[in-house]
Amino acid sequence: MAREEANRIPIWWRWYYWGCPIAWSLYGLVVSQYGDVKEEMDNGESVEEFVRRYYGYDREFLPVVAIVNVAFTVTFAFIFVLSLKAFNFERR
Image (cartoon, rainbow, N blue to C red; front, side, top):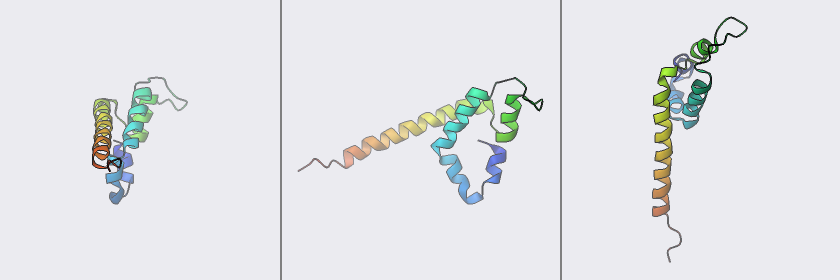
């Protein structure tokens, strides 16, 4: 994810940053929507350059982000199914 941003996070919180599905989703949304915009902003910098400089988000990392988001979804669905099987409260 964001190299610069990850360096600003205290070391004891970095595990949460990398393990948070919301962080991965936001990375994917920002990069997929703004990561290839070549239009210049008021300061002369393109949107693509700003996203890369300020957030540290790289468009080439988008396939990895997609795989991680799918993995989170499959993992949570699998845990849900196992929980339903293990905690069946309708047994008599």
